[in-house]
Image: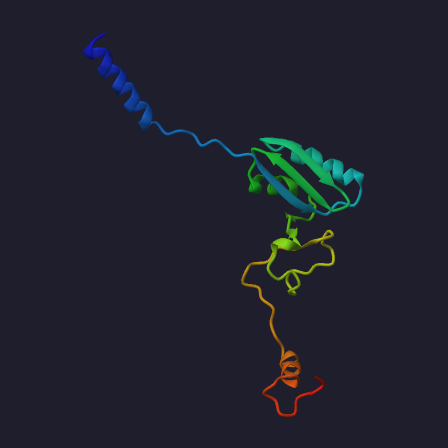
Amino acid sequence: MGVEGTLEYISDLLSSVKKKKKKKKQIQTVALKIRMDCEGCARKVKKVLSGVKGAKSVDVDLKQQKATVTGYVEAKKVLAAAKSTKKKVELWPYVPYTLVANPYVAQAYDKKAPPNHVRKVPATATVTETTIDDRYTNLFSDDNPNACSIM
């Protein structure tokens, strides 16, 4: 077991490094907004989502119209499985309003959102000023000689 054993050991090490290692899937949580009208709809959705390969747990909230799948799953596969129920399905569009820079812009506000949540909007969405806003700011400006002088 001298030199030959050592060479064989080094050869095995190098060949094991060259082999591609499979990526381990991460546990992921996928939240969906699904239109559900009754307990029967909720049971149907839960049964279909439980059948997705890699799903560890499925939670269905009928009041919020939300289904949450946790496990070694991909969002595309979960979305496809949910669409097979022939219900209106989309990825969960809401985030807590504290995570959004401008939670009251027109794109973010949604009456159907759960309490303390707004729609997820891109960071490029900003508040746009109108000519009415400019008129009011000029009314109280120090540069305007006809400005209101209440103070």
